[in-house]
Length: 254
Length: 254
Image (cartoon, each protein chain N blue to C red):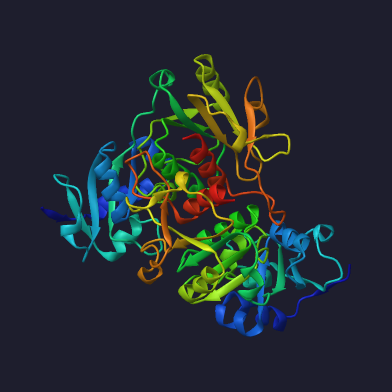
């Protein structure tokens, strides 16, 4: 493996990928840490175009072959890192193309939908859990944090890109799926919601997770969409964390 | 409600509670944010001894009665806050006494045990989930982050103190419970572990969650303790987040 020194210009250019605007323009994102880079490389869905390592990083550990590797000083490396304690390796990756609803409509399985999820750690953890349970697609409703935000990517533990992503107006996307026989379930802790334990899981199911504070938007509550909840036994806490509720629902549905 | 200005000396003293050493010495901890303070107050398990509010905070929103309330400038308030964007209210609370194994041994139900959990957010989220499912106790094995660390307290969303806590050498504590008929389950993703779906849940069950990186310590694997796992379907991610695995296990056990 040939390793070249990273130029100041390269660092300056890649550092911009920490911001959403530039990510969208360049169609590139950064994945940080050995485990994430390894997993993304193993999955083979995401194209890795170059690797940065910090001086002193064990070059034998670089998991990707035939891709330019650049070595950066600790300072330069910290500039393109999103973490307080950088882990010595960052991959520059291509943002995959959006999926088309048509490519998923005729499948069976579970699709996970997000309505304005704001916390990057929550979104990343849910993408990771979704990959574990092999969900067929992810619907990113308007207002949801960018799935290629560095904190999201880190929380996915390499599952970024594992499932096809469709972004846009959630209500409109859901309609297309419902026309093809998909059932829609809204995670909602209200007393009148149906308990998750009692659901008969249809072959084509979409599960929606709402915003951490305000839940699912009002306009999504319509038609034959069903509100479901996770029965709590304790009275000493008001709700579950969004990524926890999501995980329990996926366990039940998958 | 009478509100007095907080003195510099008070701020200096309470700021020390952000550190573990001083928390243990004073047997006090800080709970931050309106929701957490409200929930802790509603639960009535934890004694709140005083409240700090930031100047401008709506005093009518203070959820605790008959407790001294002190108003602090934005700067002083930030000094006792653990967050980047303080939420305007912090309660000083008494750390409850440790529970004795004897007080739990003869109950039925589920107990959750932590072996060297390191991430405060993970621990707090698991304490919150445990409260939701009404677990009967929490065993904090040596090496687990302090449950009264401000980040842990924040992640519990007010569930801090809801379940009795026993801290110490996990193996020794488990033995006491096993002598009284409790079954011990180790969350472990190894292929040879039994799938969670196949477990018959005993009336007295202890579920152990291991360290985020290295899992459960070797010495815990012995006797009739059973390794259990959450069956994954996807191949694009290696494992689940610890708090996610914990939540799915509690859903199944509770």
